[in-house]
Amino acid sequence: MLKIGVLVSGGGTNLQAIIDAVESGKITNAEIVTVVASNTKAYAIERAKKYNIPSIVISRKAFASQEEHDTVLCEHMKNCGVDLIVMAGYLSIVGEMLIKEFHNRIINIHPSLIPSFCGQGFYGLRVHEAALERGVKVTGATVHIVNEICDGGPILLQKAVEVKDGDTAEVLQKRVMEQAEWTILPQAIDMIANNKISI
Image 1 (cartoon, rainbow, N blue to C red):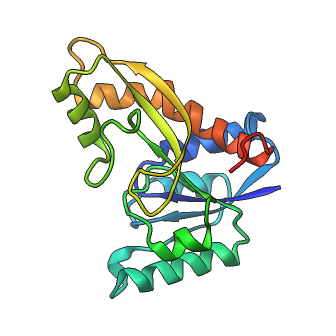
Image 2 (image 1 turned 120 degrees about the vertical axis):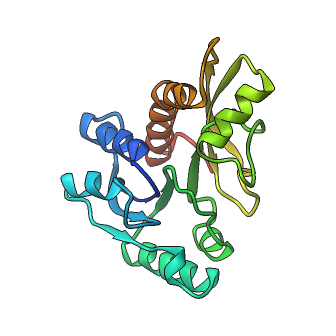
């Protein structure tokens, strides 16, 4: 059984997609053992509570340094017996310590087709604003392994989404979540849990 630790920062819609996929059997051989939020206002914590999934807030602002924060986060994940860390709308960059400790065992969902609109500063609505400013006709989402380069790790899955005339960043963000993110993130977890991807 693959033990998953989920990192969240906001509403937790990707967390919900993972929970739903576990409940429905789309993800097999895996369970969420902890949800870690980067701030106390993350609604994702409420989602975790509803399903009796242990959750905790580990905020970067509560620590004097990135290293201290990473030490606590790393220890928490190890204490929970986590096999795979899933960054599901986590708006902090994880430090080197966690990446080394969980080498090739951290995945992230990014709301574009990497290598487009990714890297430092590209998160949330900014990604979709950039896609609209560039005038692309197709965008999407990417699940990738996390390494030391922001959004630079090996790609596991991608799914394309059409950009429509009159789209706002908010409308596009919703479509990318519904048509791509909520599909490929659970799919990647299931593939890892059942050894269908060799990392």
